[in-house]
Every structure is written in structure tokens, then in C-alpha cells.
Image (tube, rainbow, N blue to C red; front, side, top):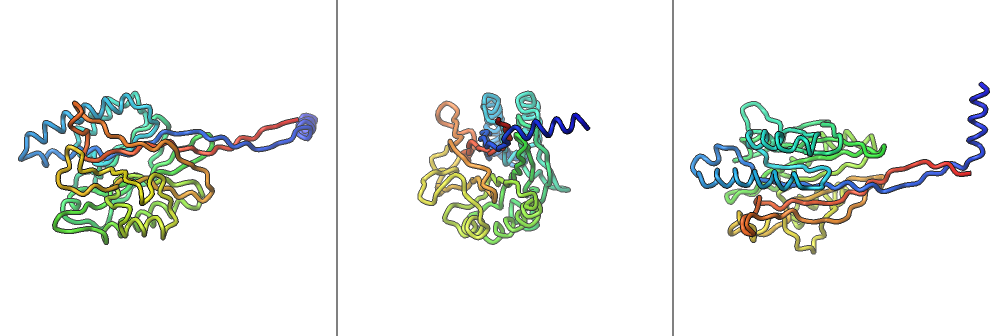
Length: 296
């Protein structure tokens, strides 16, 4: 009892105040186009290029100073194994792509230097054409940094095809992400980062629905920006329209996150062949952490 009284007396001689400090986390999201081997059945050239691209992508990631790297289109089983084998020492916390019965995996992979926890995996109810053969969906994972928790969503939405566009399907998939992943964690009031290959541009109906109607913030671009993640100057893209198909969004009711240093991941082999048909996004996440300080 005497110790307790002494402790309280000591506290009364100090002023206790909080101090907020920003702790940056370097984060990236990248579609690396590691397709299932069956896609190379009629093309040894594509198979050869994928093997070469995998080696240089792994070397690039190995030399990266990014804390969290999330990938899309890691469909190839051997690519998953090789990435795990070569990068597990650099990124000890890895989330692997998941699969549905008799389908290819969702292709969603996360490599992290920080402890992360897989919270939930969903598979989209609605899809069509080639996308119906893979387990497309979204994953939710969490991390804690200086006592501040954050949730991150990695996803890859329905693609467009020359014979059919997919605005309605993507709208349904976005609604499923919000209903099954985002809404359930809103009770924690922790910030939610949503990143990946959304397959819609800044001027699309899906973008308006997702950002303006759901009160999300686009962390990277304004509609006036000419920053393309899917570019017709890319080696793999011929006769395509340059668009911003990859995004990083944030739902942050408590304003605990800010962003800085946006850049594109766009390495080339021999200054000619791009590592992937998509450019990745890299950004510094400034997560506000609160410390309590005692002062006389």
C-alpha cells in the first residue's frame, strides 16, 4: 500500500502529455504477370521470357528497401516456390496465394519484413471468361507498428476483354470487398489500406463509385495526372490504351495516415524489356503513433 501511495504521489508531480510521431513504412504493390504454365503451352518464347523475368524480379525485390511488397498475378506454382525460397530471409513474413477447388490460385502474395497476420480471404462470386478459371478475390491482412494497428487489402479485379467490358462485374466485386472485408473491421476504427490491380481507370464509373460514394481517398493520383501503370510504351503492351489501372486507396476515419514519395516500379532488362506488363506502385506510409511523456 505504501508503494502504491508513493507511486501516485510521484505521478502527481509530473505533467502527462501525449506526443504523436510519424513512423514511415515503405509499401509497394505490383502485378508481376507470373501466368500459369498452361498459358505457355503454345509459346516456348513466353515460357522462356517468364523464367527470365522471374529471376530478375526476384533479384530486384531482394535488393529492395521496401518493408511490405504485395504482388498480384503470382499464378505459377513454381514461381511461388522460387519467390519463397529466394526471399524468405529478406522477407520472413509471407502470405501465399490461395486456391479454390479445381481452379488456379488467386495470385495474391505478400512479402513483409514486419510481422503481418492474414485475417481473411474471399473469392469473388461474380466473374467471366478467363477470370472464371482462377480464384480471383481479395485478402485482408493486418500489422501493428508502434502500437498502431492497420489493415491492408490486396486484390485483383475482373479484367476487360476485347469482346466484353466488365464494369458491372467489377462493381459487384467492389461491393463484395466492402461488405465482407472492410465493413467488419470498421468497428476497430483502424485505418484500412486497399491496394492492387483494380482494372479501372481514374475516369471510370467504378472509380467514382469506389472513391466518391464510399468516402475513400485515392492516395496516389489526381484525375489530371498522366501517371500510367499500364502503358503502351511498355514492352508487353501493344496497341493498348495507356491507363492507371493500379491504385492505393485509404479508409482512415481518424486521420492516422499520410503518404509521401510516390514512385513507379518500372525496371527493364537491357533497357528494353519491362519486368512486367504493369508498373508497380511504391509509397511511404506515414503512420501516426502516439507516445505518452511525463514532464515535471
